[in-house]
Length: 413
Image 1: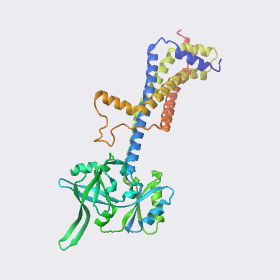
Image 2: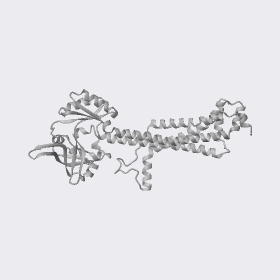
Image 3: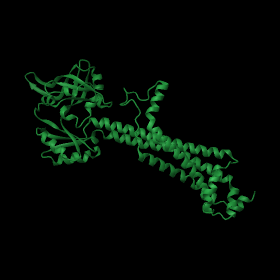
Image 4: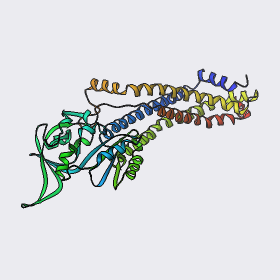
């Protein structure tokens, strides 16, 4: 009996009616606060994971994970491509020529990164084909001078499929007319939409047309790479550039898109820290409710001490009470958080239909729905941190109870 005294009396105190109903109210508020804090933390972290996944799949699905470019135009790109594909981490490789150019339509002019590619290889390094909203990527054939534009770029230029625009590269031609900029008229053969900034500053042409425009026929600028593990791109790209014969420059997605993903990670940590304050407030409520309970149970504690209960057993009684509040609150919060993370898209869609508004406007954001990706490690982290916080909140009140002197507590009884 004495071995289970703390658990037995602690459970009795939990179910017993108290003279001071305010203490029960504070305990209930503490439990609800823990539940809400854990639930919101899991849902928000899952939504942040969903945005990270969408950005990773969309943006890094469009841009190469790594690029290897020659100091001079590369003519033996087939051999370089085969050498790159021999690396176990390389999933695909494609030749390319790219340059920042000026796109000029009858209405507007815009700067954009124009990439010359080959439709036969582009699927190995890009998801462009899956995001064509008009036209066909296979229309990029050499000599037809076709161009594929991002949807936002086409809107800014005021053109659509079938219209013609001029593409001016940052080079000049010298002839009897003097020094003139080098440009060529292209036909818009297709429009793509990824839903990101790439839609506003990216265009694609056939690499042979781009090579002709830049006066490097039969050669390319380098090769683009896609990796099985995109986080290995910096190491693999650098290793391949060093191992290849000749002088080559290399780059990877961390130099072009790395800041974006670092910002997402920072936002995830900051939002998680701010939302953890809800759990901290609930933990402080556990402290206040236990301190008031200790004050209310002074005579009971004194009687238990005179009957031979040790201070550690008295301490355990109140730790059991605070622990039950923490475990129940965190457990319910985990269940509700998991259910919310798995159904948040349907919940938001229902609210949008009910009240007639849109949370994410597809014309402003790159997605029109709220993504969610539930991760087990996030659930475990939230549960462990919340349980530790609730456990620590029981230590001081329980210690206060264990320091109660029987004579002082029974003096006025």
